[in-house]
Length: 247
Image (cartoon, rainbow, N blue to C red; front, side, top):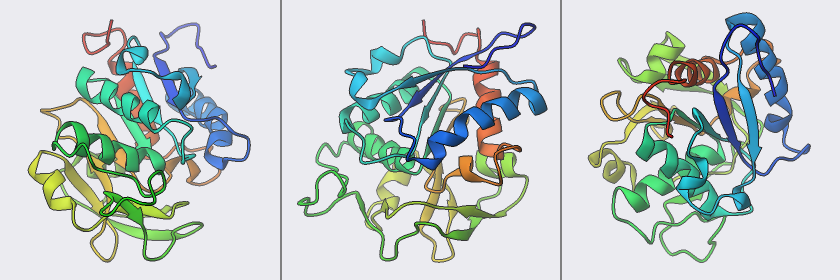
């Protein structure tokens, strides 16, 4: 937990099943310290296991929700509740790796009207999973991403191209991007083959809703937070204690 005597610290829900074996989880304290030291962005951090979340209301009062890597989660439902809480209440949201996958899963079920949408890691018998095994695993790879101009992702990065680090084996099935886009989701980053790697909601629908299949928390050595992480912290700070905060 990080605080600062001169500034209010927004309350951040770190949703994920915390484990010392997950590298991104080990990075969080270093990132929080760097955000405070470099950007004067103190954060009040609370780790919440997916199996501790029984409904979206369990996350009311948080100023930001970060759905972290570490899937398969102990509770798929808990992870989806976290996404829905952020999406419906205008709470700044960041989803990375498994967080990206489950953000798309929640959107498909609750916005696109696909209650049968499945994640193959959680439901390997699903006939047509929304989240499916990648043709080639991205575990340990650093690969280029093309960023769509005018999007939140492009504004944060300040560029239309980036190289990012992955640690995943699942992604969005190619049958579904058009459906999600038709219901308002924006795919703002794609790999060299055109597969979605970053998703967001436009500003008129949400103050900050961003998810990436790559893991921005693993950029560098953690001493310079990735623009997605810094942007999330800034959004949560701007919402504290403003009208976007859920009471």
